[in-house]
Length: 533
Image (cartoon, rainbow, N blue to C red):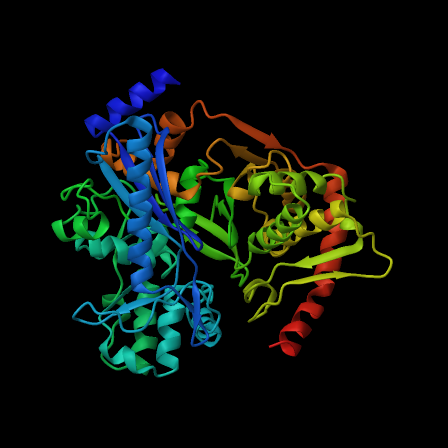
């Protein structure tokens, strides 16, 4: 350990480091890595979205307070660990929740509060775009948000000059450049895999639809420029440096890689950029990314077609609701343990509860859990009501309760994955990451049952996207020689320590039985949204 610390201190002093910062839905995290991609220091800042005027948002003030808070925590961690302040970094990059809508006028003023991916008010726009453009436009896509604003004749569209994603916004304010990594851009508008840019014929048709509602407005002129991983995305300006880090540790002139979405950084963090591979990211939302060998034959509303940070097509199954309800139940059990006089911390609570799940019945004992804190487009629900349901004859035990809660976190995802299976998409491996996989072998095993495919986890699982963003910054710092896939396989993951869980037949059969009940029980969830305001 001492030798590693010495090497790390030398890398920090020499500036051969890269910093990745990701704005997740509940946490903003900064990860500093060295030239060997090992984590040197981290910093984080908790935040929460707000439901304002029936829309999910984060304020501009919260964005910058959170970014600065994460950077300040990282700087403190560096000094505490290595005994010296951070003298700067070699490169940095920002990633964030994909999609959403941040519209600005010609004076660079935000016209309406940031509308996040979580909003489901864009149904009419998404349906019309999907029908007219022959491509699935999910509710959360930026183009859907723009078109819905046009359909609703919102006053702000008269002044619209530019719109972007959260990562694109942060990058723009720090560098002055209105650019976006191709992976994040593919969640704004469809990408042509041949050109690694917006699909030109489709964009022309979109312009026509937009102009019909707002003559003179060209959507193609409002979008950020698309960049592929490794391309020059600008440098930190003096104003940007002051905004990011008032202490001056991170210097103006530091190069930035293209801003990316959390889906793309998750793919990098799991070496899932080659065909027949993919990853599953479990956080507040949960989504699967599967790299395609060829385009899908049909349009499916359950699937987004996006790209890797290198520009290759990916089928994305995105569910608005992930592990939040699990966390809520863990807090309840933690409060109970404290009331009983036991203090073990959140990791101990999660470890105990998750381990109990392995003792549960394969079919969950007849219990059902819906983790719907918000609407869920895959199952056609505009709003959510978290539910736990059982019959008088069900077997309510801690083991079955926790197995069902984990099954519930994967339920909507597995419905979307079955669409890919029906399209003939083959999977060799899926890499899972996110905090719920920190308890070894539990969520991983049950996820393998849910998707009926091998699930891999590795030592980067708990760092996830912010580490992946740091790797993209390091790829830029080292000159981006060779493809991103080769760089990951040969330089980043060549000696990775991973664990693979193959599907257990009894778990697969039990989960299938549980999922049939889950699908039937969606009527209960729908009734709850109608009955309980």
